Image (cartoon, rainbow, N blue to C red; front, top):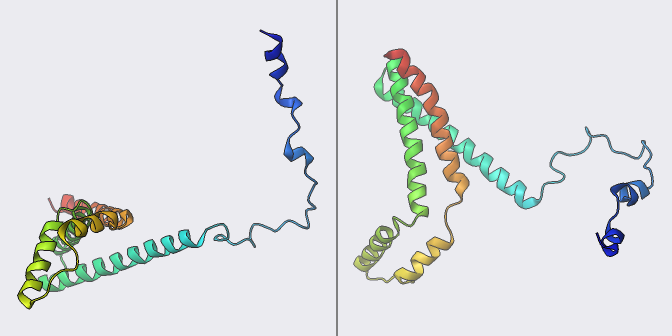
Length: 171
């Protein structure tokens, strides 16, 4: 090694760290962890996102329970077969909602939606504000948030577990 390389080399123990140079804090000045807020370090944007996700999950659970109860009422039966049928219906509906949202984000429905809107407005005698290219770019730049898709697919997966178990019991 050259002498210049030896001068640049230092041991980790030779460097004074910032931790050693900080003054010690008295134990009475420290805030106990139980008194610190759990959400103190979370930004307002992250808190709003978590709140939106929680609301979405709650709405999906309530709608699924209502659909489940409606299907049981429709069948006028509460046997294991009726419960299994209702669970499978809820699984299919949840998966279908997630799939439709996914297809919407991939701009599969953009020509269909734009065509129906323009045709309907043409019948009334009005015109759309944007042309197709602008409409498609706007939809591409503002997709549905991915957590909606993830929540729908995950909820259908969770609901599918008891449905499969009931199906195996009935076979």
